[in-house]
Image (cartoon, rainbow, N blue to C red; front, top):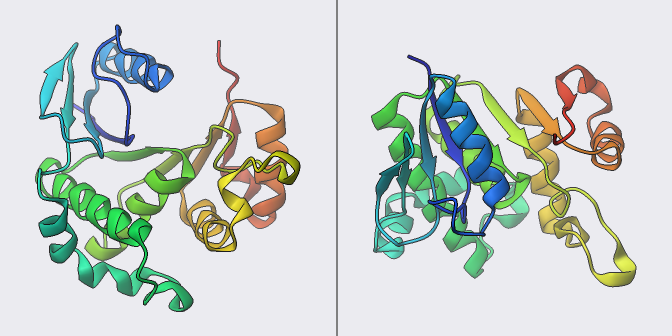
Length: 202
């Protein structure tokens, strides 16, 4: 049986919850097709299996996970390695959680929803493991598109723009749901357009 590790920091664990329920709907469809689905979350509400999907929350002590993952900072761009920010603390803790699940579950595919933080934490985890697991990223808008007039888009900050570009170039496949996201992603990965897939939400 193929095993998929989905990386989605805040996805809901039940259809009645609304947080990222579009991701929940997708993982349920994947499970119904016979895949074994596991989800790496950044929340701390406890692990649970529901509707054929197992949700794995980050361990209660994110600080201990961060300390165990500090060596992963070597996979950061040099200019960001010594940035003492809360985001790096969270990224490394999440990357450590993903790496631990990858070692334990041996997934056939690692699928991150959003290029940041999910895609970046997945990339760091895979690099630290030296893993060749196929790495898929689904982009949803805020992680790729920008609109400076209203402050929309994570890439408005240079640090995040840099790491999103790394994720896009390192992913084995990129899924987008709209033409606008497709065109912007195509511009950023002009040398690897064959890995970009437009799959409209039905």
